[in-house]
Every structure is written in structure tokens, then in C-alpha cells.
Length: 520
Image (cartoon, rainbow, N blue to C red; front, side):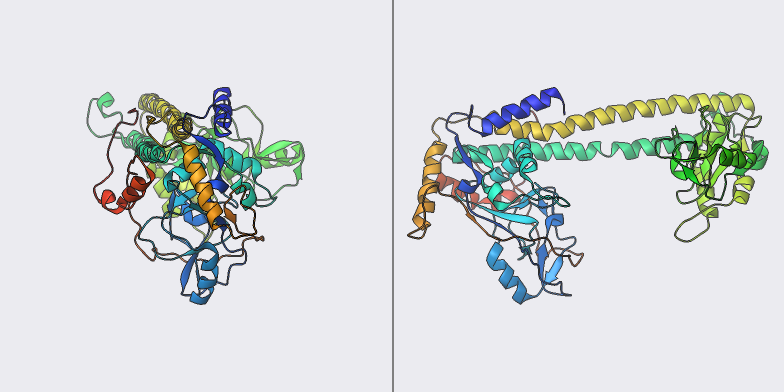
């Protein structure tokens, strides 16, 4: 984490805890703004071949509820479990075990479902559900969850700690404005990130196209003066001084010694010595009698992940096991590396691979594999052009990584800005949050049974403990269609807000308003 980001989070912590809250806001906790906090079943019933859905944390993804994999339980078991969660439209779901902190607001149009312990149900009281969900998504709240999670093998946050989560409460109309603005901006951020994440696939296709053009003669057609390439057709055995493979035996490993290279150590950019085993010098000398590897030789993986190719560009001493070794000959090794990496050669290897769960290509296949050899001056020109185009692709990848990093900072920055009161305009005519909070407390106190403490007013927190049970799996579509998310309307009072929230279904049909990502 950068110093600047840490300072920003420190400022957010002060804000949420009441220091420097915007005018009209109030400091409170999650337990005060929810009339009920409950988690799902601690002892989930056995799965059935048919029945009603019981979801878990895996079903809460990307701020949505999905039904891609879930347990079915009998209707009788469902009714018992539903007494605990009683999920309704507008409830906020929060993952609290394992992957802590993912949220989703229950939309209209879903069929009935219940939950396992890994998901909590938050039922907001006089608070906009989407605003509450965004607070849970914010960096400061996520940091609070991380700091308060307990457990060893699988961390979780207890309901008591959840109820004590700091909560910045703005006036109700401002909650609506914030939720509306965040929904619009974050949808645009997500759309931009989705487009950006296509870049690696495009760069990979670009590199493959360059390699294909290089070994077919298209890349240097103009350099040759036009016309098709008339290259020598030969085999790897003829193009290299020899083709061998490493030892098939497993030498005794030692703590310090000579690295033993296998398929997993062959990368497109070179040899990876980060995860190797070591053998004795005597074993290395014995293996080297069969397959001594030298600089500018080429290695290729033969078992498992077939066809990874790299040229040896190090003077490090090592041995090889179950790896193909193309020994340098009179032809340009860089050109031959390009040829072995090309789609044409890789497709040949795929066609010749044998084996069941673990595919392999034999040494005989490598030796007889076809190679096209242009004249040496053209080999050099191909290498020059490929390296130039790949350098361009490397620059694109660096720009992509930088842009993706910026996009990944946008959502936390927007959420932090929202809960400092800086994202939307404040209206002095809004009812102050302290008045709203007192009304919430009064409503809570009025429903508290006589003889029980009424101060402070807190959410009803369900009791219980235990671990998640094993889950039966089912794939398929949700039992009901999920409504499309729509902008949250603005309002000047609580009554008007409730009325406008009831109009969400119609608003969703009208589409989401498009605005500039950086519009005030």
C-alpha cells in the first residue's frame, strides 16, 4: 500500500468515526441502522435432488446474487430455515465467512431462497439499501472487517462485531443522491474495466499473428521484393546440430547443488530458476553425457504442458529432465526459436501428442518435426522485425497494467469520496441525520418488549455458532428472473423517498441515465 493511499484511509477512518463528518451527518453503527442482523443456517440440511435453494457466499458475486451453483433443500427444511433469515426485497446480503465483504441488495423478481452461515442478512431501517451496501463496500469498512475477522483455517466476522461496524449516516435525501451517483459512476467504471480487460487477449493474438506471418514469409514479403517465400523444407534433426532430451530418471535431490530444469521452468521469456530442485554434481555430470545444455541451445517442454519454448541465454550450469534439447547449429537460433513458438509448429505438436491425462511428445516426433528455413540474411531480418513488434507489444502490456491499476483505484476512491460528503451536493433543507437517527431509535424503542432495555437501540442480532456444512452442488438458472438495476431516485423527505423507491420498477424500464464519469 502506498503512503498516499494509507494517508487517505487514515482520513476516512477519522471521518467514519465522527471526526470531520459533513454537516448534517451523524455518527452511528450498523446495528443502529438495521432493525435485524442475522446470518444463515449454522447446520444446513442435507441437499436434495429437488426443492428450494439454499445459497452461500459463492452466490454473492459482483454485487449480484447468482444461482449458478447451490444446494436444494426440502420445502419443510426451507420453512424452518426461512424463519431465521426471512429474506425480502431490499435486504442487504453480506458475505461474512471466508471471502468476507461481498455485498448484494435483494432485487425484485427473485424466487424464494435461504442462506448458509457464510452470508448475513441486513435489514435496514429508514436507510436506503443501496447506500448501506456501498458503505459496506467502502475501503474503510472493508478494513474494519479485516481487522475484526476471527478464526484460523477460515476467518469470519461475528454478528456482534458486525453490529458495531462504524456507519456514516447522512440525511435520507442525501443517501438517495449518493446511491444514485455511485450507481451511475461505478457502472461506467465497470464497463471501462471490462473493455480494458480485453487487451491481454488482443495482445496475445497480435503476438501469435506476428509469429505466424514470420514463419510463412508474409512478414518479409516486401523485404524480399514480393512473391512467395521459397524456403528450404527440412526437419529439426537437420536444422539443428542435434535433437536430444533430458534424463528420464529422477536423481536424488540435495539441498544445494546443480539445478534440475523440468517443463515447469521453461517460460516464454527464458528459464525460471525460482522453483527448482537440486542434484549432486556427479548426477549432473552423468546427465550431461546425454544432454549437456549450452548457451543459445533451445529447450522445449515435452510432457504435460507441451510446447513451451525458450532459448538459453544464461551461462548458469544446470541439468534437464523430460525436456527437449535442440542443440545450436549453423542456423540462427533466434529464428529457430521463433519458428518453434509459431502457431504452425505448435499445432503440429498438438496433433502428434500422445497419452491420456498427461500428454507428451516423443523425442522421435521432435527430431522429425518440419522446419522451414529461409536464407540466413532473411532469418536475421525476421528476427529483427519480430523483436521490434514484440517490443511494441511489451509497451502495450505496460500501458495496460498501468491503466488497470488506475481503474482498480477508481472504485475505492469514489466510495471514499462519497462517505466524506464530497461526491454530491448537500442541501441545507434536508432533514438532519440526527433527527433521522432519533426517529430510528424511537421506532426501535417502541417495538422493544416491556421489561427489556431500550437504550441504546440496536439491531436484533441472531444467536448461534458453528461451521459451514458440506454443500451439495447444483448448476442452473435462478428460480426467477432478476430485475435490472436502476438509478435510485432523489427525494426531499422520508415519505417522498419511500414513494419514489416504490417506483423503481418503472424507472428501471426507462434505462440508466448516462453521465460523464467525472461529472460533478
